[in-house]
Amino acid sequence: MKEKIAEIKKYISELKIPGINQGLKMKIEEAYKLDKSYEDFLLDIFAEAYVVRKENGRKNRIRNARFPYKKYLDELKLEYLSEDGRKRFKELKTLNFIAEGRNVILAGNPGTGKTHMAIGLGIDACNMGYKVYFATVPSLINELKESKSDKKLYTFEKRFEKYDLIIADELGYISFDKEGSELLFTFLSLRAERKSTIITTNLSFDRWNEVFNDAVLTAALIDRLTHKSYVINMNGNSYRMKETKDWLEENH
Image 1 (cartoon, helix red, strand yellow):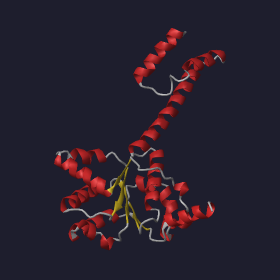
Image 2 (cartoon, one colour):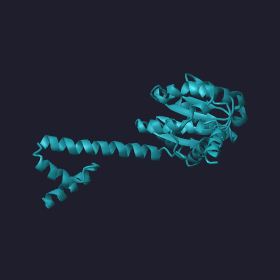
Image 3 (spheres, helix red, strand yellow):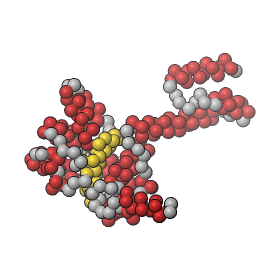
Image 4 (cartoon, rainbow, N blue to C red):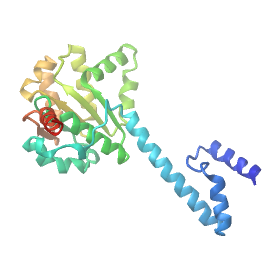
């Protein structure tokens, strides 16, 4: 039997079927003991392999999304969110906006839970089988510029077509030069009404021109990003300050 099991494992390895090799001998012995049919035996091992593959895929999607840290929606204290954030939370949590190719713009002052909500939605999307990519806006612009200088911009843009959801964090903290503004405009415009993008920003729309330094381009971008989008006002008292206050009260 040892030789046969070794040969079976070899084929499984060559076929790249995860989850079968582990405990294979025990599964075969159990099948003999319970007098299982070939059909039941195969069903058992392939069902287990399917579960392992799905779990590996889920973990890989989360890892490949490049989240800076993990934040979950069930960790969000809804009472700390803005009124608009609380109202829209349940609807966003369904992830229907991804299936519909709609954008989400979380706009508000620093520390109000925008990035936490964005990452939480991103992780839930990964768990549901969607491909997600997280980047701060400055790092995204740097990637776009590098791709352009290497004459790989088209390849870069095509690569991002596979992502069901892109999270562009921290729009408004750093202003861009003309090239950066135009590259980001083109990149986000290509996704408009086709694939979803979540943008977090500390600036109201009337201040976006401070970042893009081009009134016409800014107006066009806002028009494309907000069409059929969820625009959520996250302004309020600092979520982080409230969490810190709670922690201090619990530990003193």
